[in-house]
Image 1 (cartoon, rainbow, N blue to C red):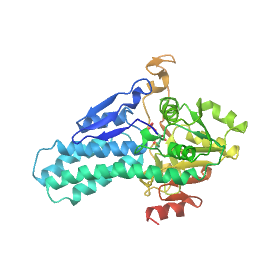
Image 2 (image 1 turned 135 degrees about the horizontal axis):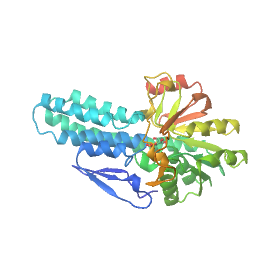
Image 3 (image 1 turned 180 degrees about the vertical axis):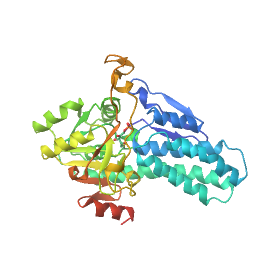
Length: 346
Ligand code: MRU
């Protein structure tokens, strides 16, 4: 449905679409050094929780390939700063840390330096492929929740460019459309960095799904007018009780949806769940530079030198969530039990 591929491993380097330039320019970066991955994640050249995890896995591979030793101990030691740097790139998306943990296990299990390097490459490819397959599974599961003729609102971008290549929240929407459900989408522009206007709108246009772009502050009015029948968004981290961190503005949409009796769904793979935290209170919210708020695409829209807040995410308490759509099925109240079963693979 989309020609855009966020990441592609090319044997010894990573081809990465620079999402900061979309939709005006499609620029691909050829990345050969793990430090370039750290900076690409930080400046949102690659973004969206699952895509960040995949990029970090390839970052470990690039780090390992640059270490020239046949001594296992030296390799393990020299890989430590690689893991630390990648883990410091962004704090909120659970998938980043999940992917690094998968890669760390490969390092621990390997018997020789050569074996570890080979296995790291395979593991990154497996993580990437598994994510794409999860996208499709959860999209098919989620599409069953969308009715013929529904107008579905989504926030930020949880599409092909944010994931393994198809999408989570936007995957659900695209799948429902492909199933012939004649739906319509409302996409919020998503200030401050406009992932909705720049990326979701681009993706929906490419896929041929009918949609309307709205500013973030229009959602309530459209809901009140009966124009929206469901809200589907992605997630950056989901706690054991179902509390969900996602792009700033998600919480406001959840509160509005409840007021207007509109079902509010989260779509995310198992790798987004943080089974170690009891509630959303423990989620670290990234604070980004105030210039992202005072400037729009490099142009000041507010007086220079003023104070501006820029939390990148907020937490939606589980009480506002009707269901969480995963590749292993749809989780409903009581979330704690459903999430425990997900963890145990039941
Ligand atoms: O700051 P971003 O663009 O990385 O934020 C992305 C989101 O909030 C997405 O909704 C989330 O990561 C899920 S992507 C499938």
